[in-house]
Image 1 (cartoon, helix red, strand yellow):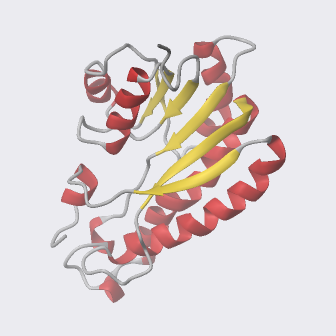
Image 2 (spheres, rainbow, N blue to C red):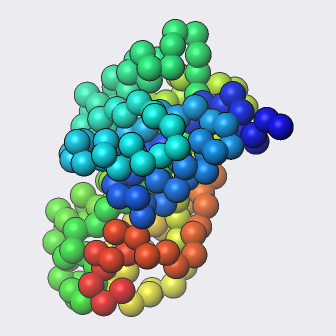
Length: 205
């Protein structure tokens, strides 16, 4: 019996460790029959060792969402690994970051603008950047999915990361508007409490 994602090609971003949500998304997608393309940032050799633990091999591309050259070349690099004439059926954005000054026990009012701006760039603006970069290689009927949590409350410790997630939700609505005419959906999934590297980085969280 064919898997739910048999014959589908999916780009998964954000694998850092084997406890990353992105790692488990990739694992389940492969088990359901998907062909994956993965992206990593900075520690590429370490990330390669992590993705070697997946059920099947998958190509790993470098992607720093703050690097315009990486984004501008992404569609071409994806085509190189999936083959000319082929396109993606899905994109998973599992990227989030906020400097320690913007989270945890550090006072909300004391976070420097430069740190907050970097966090919002990586956690929210990058959703639009990734959508723009991958739309040329996304099939009509495809989907872009991002990772969210409920940012409607001023939760202790999460501070500016909660602000970034609020921004992400707004960005998603505009991405859906822009991607819709291409036949591509855009949605966010809010995970429950999961002990990931990102959560562990929140002092007091």
